[in-house]
Length: 523
Image (cartoon, rainbow, N blue to C red; front, top):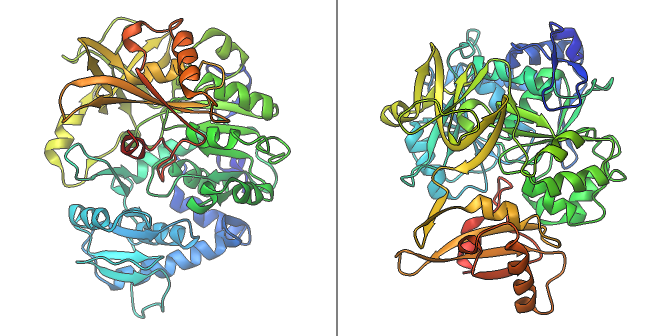
């Protein structure tokens, strides 16, 4: 089924883009209902592919129905979340949809997650059951295989209600205990039509969406929701692919990917190879980035390698359902902005910039980004005090205090880094991401990560930067002196890192972001 067949046909000019008018998808595109439609209309169309394994819409509908019946037979407490454990297998989608069809939000947990953290998630969520796509060594839950014989005599499962949690994604908590972000069925339905509206007209056999992020990272909700809603295909690459670029490119060469969704760091990793170009992905028409700062250097290189594709920068925390702003990084945007903006708000979202007392700041001034609208989370599972701290109501709409700094310029949001990602060095307050952005402007710098250094948990003594380069310098000292001299054109002396290290590849987390913990171990 084409998007146009389920859309209301609302048109919107994409602010920050070329000015072309495109069709939006319908705002309310319910994923459970969409799956049923596609399973009936195109049962043999592939919805998910991974390492040669394929899952069709018809099989996904049938197998998730069977799992829902088995979960009903388990008599799981109403509304209690269920863990779905595995990696990128097609059965993960069966687990997700089976849970919500049975009336339970799913908790995606990647099999790369350390066992202690998996157990912490189980205990924090009070989950009583785990659907195992891969073997899981856990305690205090009943483990069910994703497929099994259907029980007899069961009534029809009741799916999660529109305003109840559809999924719970666990993110890092400041106390060291993961916190579960609850996203409702209505919120994901409200979200999905917006990114579909950013895409060019859909091919006859549907868009093919790249899935780079693990399903336990909310960036993956981009491609999962768009694939299910539009009748497209989700093409997953896994952690082993990512660790070996030749193997990754072999997989991508036959994928037919039309929509690339990833963190900027993952694209930078691919751009380190000349093979990453339109010859590798001739059908690619759209890049959607989220989760990290997107540099203009990355965009310019993508424009050179993929002249047929548009590049979108998007922004949003897990607590507001993936993303809430977008901008096409076209020539006009690149010409006007040295540091790329993150876009204008989607319909249904209002962005406020507030001071520490909760008052609006003047246009153009930096403050905390507060997101208001119809995709804001229900709060943190089992954490009422933390929910009360971070979530509120503004003008009758749910609102989330992001902890991110930002400013507005004529409706365009500019991201200013984390409010808690500042360091104080010799009395100066410094934004780490400001230094990294300016380092990436320098010739030969493919990527940069800056870490504060202190002794025995004392005050910060200096800043150290890790620089990704195409080839390690023959004389690191001379190279460092050159970079420090060049950096003085953009930054005051107190912001220039004291020490430098050089890497041919930046370590990435399973989510595709720079792994600062690994870098810290190298200090």
